[in-house]
Amino acid sequence: MRISGKPLFHRDQRGDSDEKRKLYAAYELAYTLVDFGAAVCFVVGSIMFFFDAWMIPGTWLFLIGSILFAAKPTIRLVREIRLLQMGDAKDVAKRQE
Image (cartoon, rainbow, N blue to C red; front, side, top):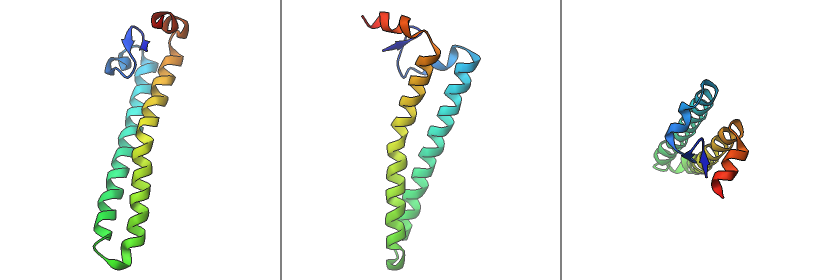
């Protein structure tokens, strides 16, 4: 699938218009924050596993980190759908044929 002549998920999608660049940047920020949150959950959860009393909270942090890692592709997909909606969907559909 292509947007503005570029493949879906291509980095250059952010260069189309101010509105698209802002949207791209907002989703990249969300993606980075989720990625950072997941990493922190895994590091802290790993440390908690060294102590018997903290194993259950550590397990919860692993679960939360896993959910955050699972959210990452969703953020990217939603971003691409939003960018697609901002462009000419009919033109995109014609290019696919």
